Amino acid sequence: MVRGLGATGNRISVAATAARALLGLLLFWPGGGAAASPTSVSIPASFQSELGCPGDWDPACAVTQLSYDASDDVWQGTFLIPAGSWEYKAALDGSWTVNYGLNATQNGPNIPLGLGAVSTVKFYYDDKTHWVTDNNNSVIATVPGDFQSEMGCPGDWQPDCLRSWLQDPSGSGTYSFMTALPSGSYECKVAINENWSENYGAGGVPNGPNIPFTIPAAGGSVRFSYDPASHVLTVTLESTPTPTMTPTGTPTVTPTATPTLIPLGESCSTGAQCASTFCAPSGVCCNAPCVEPNQSCTLPSSVGLCRAQGGAAPAASHSGLIALGIVLVALGVLSLRRAFTARP
Image 1: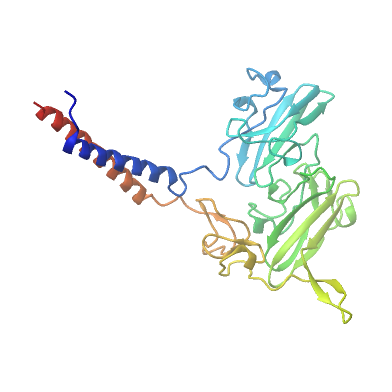
Image 2: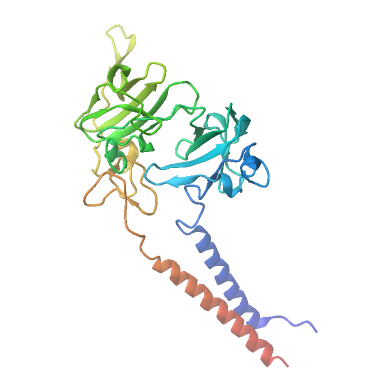
């Protein structure tokens, strides 16, 4: 005879419901979902088998994995590649689910790589812009200066810090980047291939004088643009055109400075209020989004600057939920055993 579960079934149902609820909390707990940044980046390519991979176009092959440099905030890797006409892309997390090709396009075309001889090629991937490139196809230019520490570099005048990397994802031929800086007077130059061997100063002069620029009292965003043909670096303080009306009613546009915005380190509620355009989760204007669990924009020594902080506090409430779920499931199982033991 088939019997109904009765009270025993009710107890089991309660325990199972609690377990499912616990599982849902764990899956959707803040920080428990998909990572904001990739856990790995690889270079699947037509040359992988030449480097020791089982085959080509394999995003999981360890041989062509890039390494993440926290000081640069860029993924990098160097490989010795035979002469030939090759193609490659960047793949995230060891699969083709998320991949980037030519011009930083997701699921975009393969990136060609032509080598006339065996060459050591360095590959780069920036997850902020999704630009993947190499030092054969692109000019690797950075802007070393006395502002780099404000961007998160270990120090100033560091040509190998890629936080001030000039990029050209669109393939226009002009390399640029924009960043927010606190008020002050600064200087910079352009360096090629992450060292001082080839550098350009004011007017594109090799080993020339430093290029000065000034950020106003409220702070602001500055754009660096580099022309590799003339070697001229242009530094521009970003401004917003403000429409005005002439007496005839004809609309004109007069460029004016950006309206007064909240400087770094001051309280904010949205990024639009900040000169840097970033309002950190801690509620202050910051020089970067600063959303990673181990980052803070309110450290006493650097309020307004995104810095790494100590290890995250233990997730006590998370552990408590796990313990509660285990207890509830155990009670359900115990009730089931008693019911079957007492069954006639």
